[in-house]
Image 1 (tube, rainbow, N blue to C red):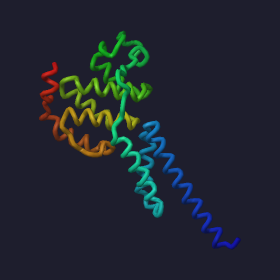
Image 2 (image 1 turned 90 degrees about the horizontal axis):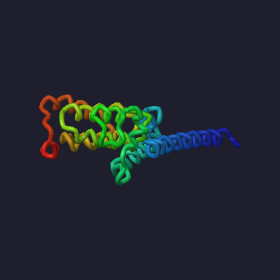
Image 3 (image 1 turned 90 degrees about the vertical axis):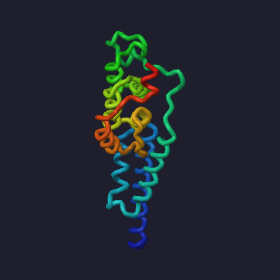
Image 4 (image 1 turned 180 degrees about the vertical axis):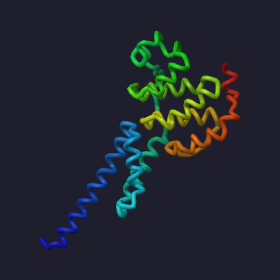
Length: 193
């Protein structure tokens, strides 16, 4: 085999390895909600060193975003297993949780994404600027994309924020910083109380 053909085969193999790696990062981001894998894929997509394969990374990034744009679904009737997630709380069901306990679940990395997403919902119906603030913080702090998109959606419904891309949490935080001083709970929330 001549050297030119060997070089072409090496280049093709390298390309295939990178493409496979990008797909694996996207798969983990989707199946596990891994924010770290999403961020690594995002970094790869915009890395000039990936010239020639960055389109594959961009396509995989788009696949992840489209998956989460379709929404997440917690099973109907799901309730946080409070005695498992917060065993020392004294609460037997999520109806007995205080807002501070709900916040604790939202930020508890060992809790399932379903429990944390449900906590985001419960927090979204607690009146006051503090609960909206907590949802904004959680979008930036969570390590799970399912929790991130839940927090983004509940924050948007609560505050009127329309950022478009839930993965750009810096934009949400910047918007919230500019608007929280004037924030008032929506009518649907104050009438429900």
